[in-house]
Image 1 (cartoon, rainbow, N blue to C red):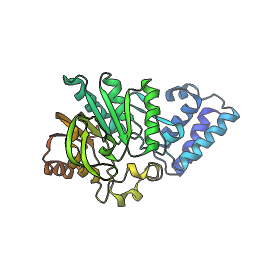
Image 2 (image 1 turned 30 degrees about the vertical axis):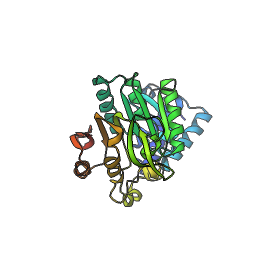
Image 3 (image 1 turned 60 degrees about the vertical axis):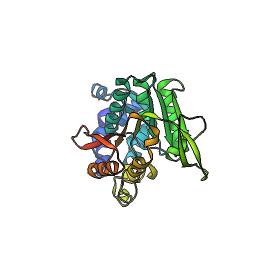
Image 4 (image 1 turned 135 degrees about the vertical axis):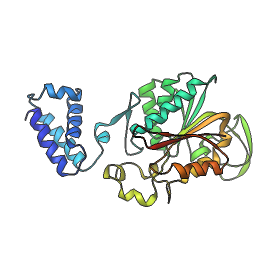
Length: 304
């Protein structure tokens, strides 16, 4: 079988399975298999696939036909110019999150902070933290996540893209991951992870940045199979109305943010007004609600 025949047959198969953009998906999988840029396929339409290549392509197409995400099949995705490994343990990075990362690194780079500090809340694959560290090499980046498996993936991605221990990775449920001795400020009556009340020393950051779960629980089963069946539910489920993590961040983040620091959060379609009210209700000053590349409100920026 030659390349053009493989593309035609695979495209037809994926179309019948309801896969969006089946021709593009086929070409991306074939280009990955042959280790060449997708556009170079057009210069190789008459290339004969080996038996082994044909078998691998059939397996790729079978998996894609079962609605497994293309990124899981290829093993990675591009984010802000970095190759980020993905798995079922973390949300696949979305293109709109690149804008969130860009706003974050521009803020860190623009200030006179030496060194600037940032907290990636719920780091997942580590994509945001890696982008910040790459663009702001003098900044101190901390990334936290409740998932041990996600943190292992994020660490691996950091080594792959940054070549060393440039990011501090901490495991824990939200800000509890930061609780330890010898921190900068004192907050009385903090509840420790073990449950006892005590004075706890906490860190402050110039930037808190996050793409938290924001899908309403009841809506998850209505999502496309690529999301519903392959992204971890914990990275999707934002509670009954999708806003649980925004309430938590609005209520808990202030002690961890410097006086002139900012919080930047991605959110879902139609959530802008409700999230703005949540933060204003906790006495935050909402500076802006930023649109994404498709002109949808997507990112909230606020300060104390």
